[in-house]
Length: 88
Image (spheres, rainbow, N blue to C red):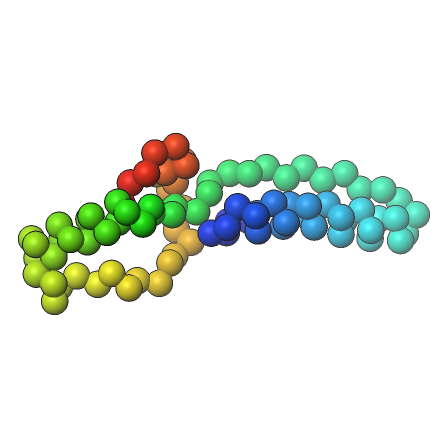
């Protein structure tokens, strides 16, 4: 499960376990869940992104820079780096 908000990821992980346990208990059983966190969403930092936007405007012209792009859930290794160091 990939989300833009770490609190939502925590909620999803907890609810999957709670729901599986509730369904299992309803039938007299038990459930064990294993939730493995893999790739986080790539989330650019605001300050560094603003710097990159200004540089792009200087290089390509303001009319060629679209800074209002809808966030995507593309995954990549770069997301792990952004958890440690800010970047555009």
